[in-house]
Image 1 (cartoon, rainbow, N blue to C red):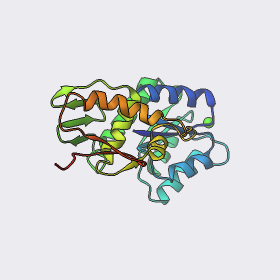
Image 2 (cartoon, helix red, strand yellow):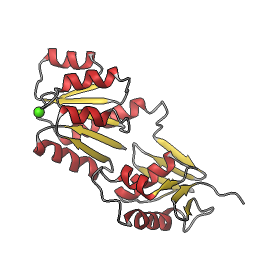
Image 3 (cartoon, helix red, strand yellow):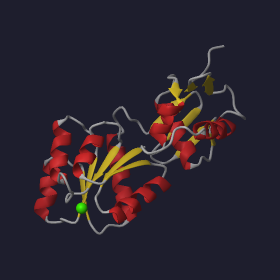
Amino acid sequence: MRLLIVEDERRVSQFLKKGFQAEAFSVDVANDGQAGLELACSGDYDAVILDIMLPRKDGIQVLQEIRQAKIATPILILSAKADVEDRVQGLNLGADDYLSKPFAFSEVLARIRSLLRRQSDDDRSPLLTLADLQMDVIRRKVLRGGKEIELTNKEFQLLEYLLRNKGRVLSRVIMSEHIWDMNFDSETNIVDVVINRLRRKIDDSFAPPLIHTVRGVGYVLKVAEE
Ligand code: CA
């Protein structure tokens, strides 16, 4: 799952970023409204956490412009402005939920999970499968052949991305851009390291193999033809 946090208070954004990363989310942070709007409009996020009082463009304006751009990503407003009118205005303009500061991380996490579940009836189903491999994205569970497999956060995120793109060849650069945050240095061989660990866990004791190397390009998750 990929999350965008639009928040100018560094202390708050880093607290949220660390918390969500520990829950196996990929997290990008925008420090002002304009940067947040541009990232949100790239359309590659599963959810957005949006502050209201922001430099360069306030959160209400950002929210309006995201919805005008026909981007339906779930948005949770997280704001110190907690009046009923503010909540109503945010929700009327297309926010999916509203939480006031100060907040407990566990509550933000629960609200985001609930937004993700709500939209998961659509194309971004929380249950991803290939052959006897199953991933429940919301409950963070992976099974192969009915056996539960423990994955680290990065392994989980990479497998989720492969499953969402099963049958498609993914380059190392594309994978690292999606799994690590946008400032990640994709020169390193970290993708190969994580892929090797994933292979040991999901392919070594099972058949058929699902992770395939495409020489000179990257990797593909599929059931290979005989
Ligand atoms: Ca603020």
